[in-house]
Length: 132
Image (tube, rainbow, N blue to C red; front, side, top):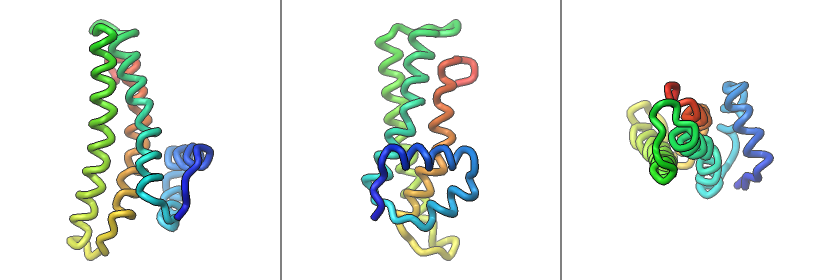
């Protein structure tokens, strides 16, 4: 089992964004524990949290919320983003036999977490409300 450290994690995130084919070929061969995947997911979802709090509460762009509401909205988006990716991993594992693949929760979660990376990093665009 490979335990992720922050430098390795940032390198993998950058590779998924810049060179996805090569990154997924490398990720497919790695043995990563669920704890490391959850850590990766929690860290990669931070731009969504920051973007929502600053975008809705501080910058606002025409629909500024109070800071309390913005923090609440940011936390809800952060938690739901993580839950959605984990749910996606379980769905991928459940439908694997339909595609004549072996059910493997670790591989399904790796696919879900790493494929959600660009979407979660894109959460920073909540800074500019019309885009987010």
